[in-house]
Amino acid sequence: MRTAIVLALLASAAVAQQPSAPPASIAAVPPDTSIHSTLLLPKDTSKPMPVVLMISGSGPTDRNGNSRMLPGPNNSLLMLAEGLAMNGIASLRYDKRGVGESAKAIVAESDLRFETYIDDAVAFCEQLRADKRFSSVVIAGHSEGSLLGMVAAKRCDASGFISIAGAGRPAADILRTQLAGKLPPALATQSEAILKDLEAGKTTEKPPVELFAIYRPSVQPYLISWFRYDPAKSIAALSVPVLIVQGTTDIQVSVDDAKRLAAASPKAKLLIVEGMNHVLKSVSSDKDKQAASYSDPSLMLAPDLLVNIVDFVRKAGK
Image (cartoon, rainbow, N blue to C red):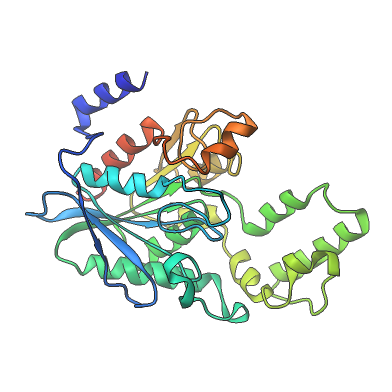
């Protein structure tokens, strides 16, 4: 099945699946030298090329799509970057503040804001736009990186934006869904009251001990800043080409999220990848197979993913 898909797309889009020679991987010069990144260039750099700024997901997820909380790597974003390079497209991916080699770039938790991460993405985007080697800059955000990327794309005047497994609802609503049915009634009532206060920009000095990990005072300013953003509204504000990608076996983000984003951005292209999970691999909904895929670098990217992203990036730069 994969061979048939690849051959059909190669005929129209000339998308390479295997490299004729290894791409060049070099360290980028970051706007903030404490933030570490990798600029991956294709073999042929004789003329200006598109570049994709890749933004990883939440938590300790590094530039390659891997997390120190998992037993092994999946290399999802590394594979995507390599696939782009094979097709004449450069990419820059970086470890966000507090993650991987950028661990020392983190500010105090009480000083951290969602905009901190947006500002970093904008700085990288502006750096790439000023680089004469690149003909266009497309931002691609995965998971939480989707929201960061769409806001950054608006601010830095990117040539296009790609949402990969991005949530379609505000973070407060996602948290509500995650907590639903998991708390005793009295604690659920307290949690909802705190959430409403945070949405209104108000902090809670003494959250219940049982909820302290979620609503500790030092993290509340960050939550307030994060809750302000509605992905649907942010993507609707973009006037550049948009691609929304979502897998059908993703156990973290649903197809409904992608459809909510697409409804807010009618001109966007919606790509539903059958059988693709959250780490961009072809995996069934089986719980054990899903868990294993998050730490299995031998699994290749879902075949429809790369060809569609390559086609989008090429067109966005024209």
